[in-house]
Image 1 (tube, rainbow, N blue to C red):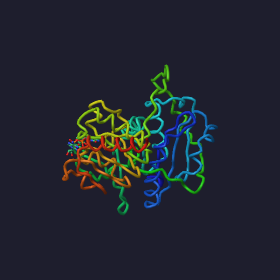
Image 2: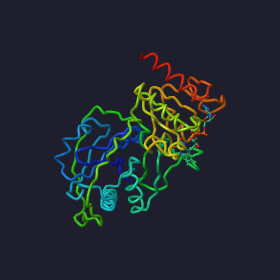
Image 3: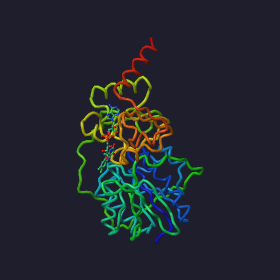
Image 4: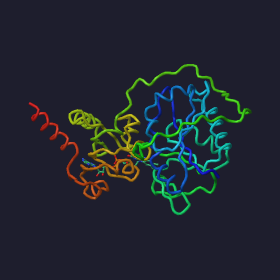
Length: 328
Ligand SMILES: Cc1cc2nc3c(=O)[nH]c(=O)nc-3n(C[C@H](O)[C@H](O)[C@H](O)COP(=O)(O)OP(=O)(O)OC[C@H]3O[C@@H](n4cnc5c(N)ncnc54)[C@H](O)[C@@H]3O)c2cc1C
């Protein structure tokens, strides 16, 4: 098996998805421990445009490989999957890793299926013991952390979004064009008829310095609206537990936890949140955690740096009153 690790660089229209840089952080460490080269690879319609991607100048990878074709202008999972599987067959990497973006999650199973190897989904930590790479991910209804290793090569995984911070490298990686065997046809069964950009601004929750998260202890939607007002005053972002997302109080990209996003703010305040592991996995690396809860035994209360055993609604009302009076 080859002496390098491949990381998928999700590229579109002059931009690299930040999740592709996130996965380089753990992969750099793995590559160093296993003494392998780290390669970021991209499928791109016009290699000239690589210059526009400033983030590529200082990444943690050793080399950047690209395959160029007009057919890569829009994402087509059948074509991309076929090309990546062929790249793996022809170059024999030790491992192939994708960020768990919708694109990464569509590609990784296709590639693994084509290669007939295992795939570990939604990894949020790695460990290297001797020559073995272990992948950690929540399992069994997300109640345990499973530590897995691959019995097939290349090792393949999708890596959870925001599980790792982006780090800059200190050298300019070498950029190489890769070509595949002539017999590989860059064809897709998919036809893109129209591309519609998303209208709603994506939430800034994952990069927020202060996160106010609401849970079922808020009781009423009206109280969640108060939390949003508080967030505006404090220039914070609002997050929710899964039940609040299911209740339609917030969009999916505001759900914190294993099924949602990971946050690492300087300050996280949980209002009426019990602290189930599925939630805490997504916020445990916050610098300072405050829990507002009526139950002093709640897991989040025990985990927090500061806990206030109070009714969330009364606390919110009092805080908003204070802040408004203070502002007058
Ligand atoms: C496969 C799977 C994936 C999941 N993924 C996620 C995920 O990504 N994110 C997530 O959040 N959850 C997830 N969950 C759900 C998770 O297990 C919990 O059920 C959920 O996090 C609980 O949400 P909560 O804290 O809002 O509600 P609860 O657990 O019901 O907690 C409410 C808390 O409010 C407190 N409270 C009650 N009244 C008041 C009051 N008046 N004032 C203050 N506090 C009060 C209570 O003491 C309690 O601690 C997942 C579950 C499964 C099975």
